[in-house]
Length: 440
Image 1 (tube, helix red, strand yellow):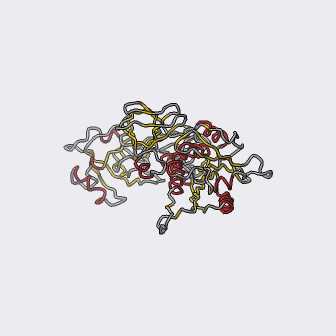
Image 2: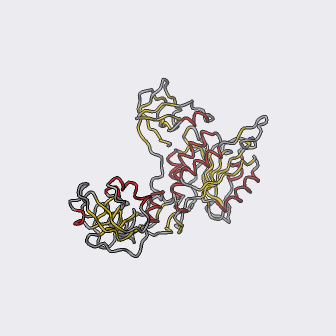
Image 3: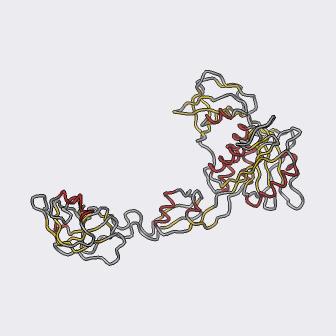
């Protein structure tokens, strides 16, 4: 959660991208750990080392359907001279009372069943007549033809070495081994391992709850009829999806009209389920920039250290930004610009790292690579601004997609990377190397 108010500067101060990000990351702290059931912990970060308490497998067991036998009893067995053994019964998976396999005997065994006392190896059913007396091919039909619990005789047509087709106790992990380290993100394989060693709950940092809301009286929900001057609300959908992609539990709030009191009431109502608030739109200098109007004086003497500061950043797109904390718990709030590309780029640069910091992750940024710029046009950029352009990256090369306009949603949908043009560059020619932020 937020622990301190952001730094302040004069209204004309132009913040760098790095200054703004550093301010956010210095303020946001990982969420407190909680105990969760395994499936609820998916996507969360462990805060404890996990030690194996039960070896895997917990006992020697068969990796095949077949017969548990003694090695000496099948030595030299062949199709011409099979080893004829007395079948003393069945050993099924989960069996507790095990048969004893003595000299000249065999126990029919199922995959996963414990190796019975006296047995030293397992011969697959395909190496036998399946107890049907019809030659080696009969073993292929034995599963369906031989009745459960059948006794009698089985012919074995191949020898087997000691411990063949046997999964040894502890061959996966042994009791006392380290299963998972603190800091591990729990995906399906890790949850499988925890369940396999008997852990039903685990201590983790929870996935942060992120509330996303967009502002603008012109916004209409998808599937509704557009009227003159209206557009569909895409930002709240894009940012909610992006928050979930970053690992958060994200809640989308319908677009709020350009009314400061309504916006303040909506935010206050949403604080109960928010570890982080994200707004989009209304942060520039226009007459209806409602977020700036509603939150510029959000802090008061009853909530020391809270408040939202609105800034100008030396970046394109995404120059206007807001950051601070609100409410009694000093919930972090990031206010992003309203143009779709500006909003999404701002999310990737600032909100995603904040979400992953709340999760307790150390790897909070998208990967970056150097790539050769391809295409048929020179990229231009305003001096003093760090520009982020959409691109398609593959095999060490990146090609611009669309123009620089911050409203070009279709181009954004075709991009899988952001091309970074540094502050001191006015242009970049095809063939030059550039920094690239990989988005997927």
